[in-house]
Image (cartoon, one colour):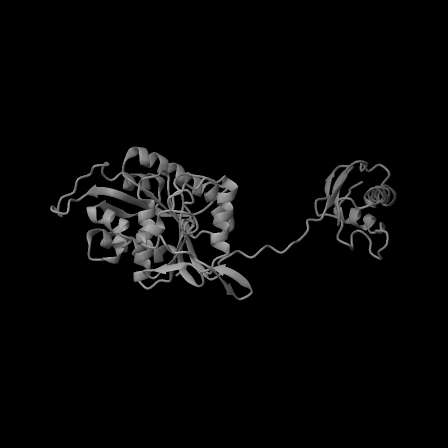
Length: 353
């Protein structure tokens, strides 16, 4: 005897779910995983609840229907699996629906100038006419308030629509939020991972970022809970990795790139930025001293087949401008200002703007 799925479904149409007028086929309870191997038949039945009181009786009735209406030789006992329907809950809305591009600025290790790059890239984008925001997500070492000269700012919550939202500080055309605004700048932030993650969620979801072309997120160095929290809270357009050309920094940059491109994170790498590429003394502006090595980031980018976005030199003014709260990108005619504006010019190539 040849058994085929239509015969099985016709037999199962004889089985009715108690309390309804529908048979189990009509009610959509028979899954489309019917397997036939000679006289051996197996399939699944879908129930609304995992603890449905009629599971056993429906399975027994289904076995009987196949044995009665098809053949008493069918091997069906113990081959029917009961499954519970997955509850279809609406997915929560992603925060920041008015932000076109959310870009992580990351580094494999500390001390490579990631926050300097984030601050100056934000300023350069704002000067190019883009609506720009910057979130300082480096909970344990927030530096953006100082770099923007707004250490004494204290953002407040304001009624926006039906919510109380934190109002970002605005400077140089950039909307800015940092945990540094909410803690004493002299005190260390000693928080467990869960507290830090909750703070980041608040700064993202409970702030009035409004309509932005770019929101840059200055992440902590390395890989941590903060990185996972960010990628689970918002959909990142991509990540920019900052490194120096020094081999020890490049080794950590590889790890950062691996984290973003791994299956669990899966965030595109926009490119690699080489910071502190060379030193140029103010009195000898034509001279270049490659104190951390030469071309390391360009080689790494080529090896990993990711874009190399450019090099940022070390000059005394970049340190002075950061300490003074006046990012170097404000002066686009300077060596570093021009470098940051060149970096900013790449951004539309990788974004929705």
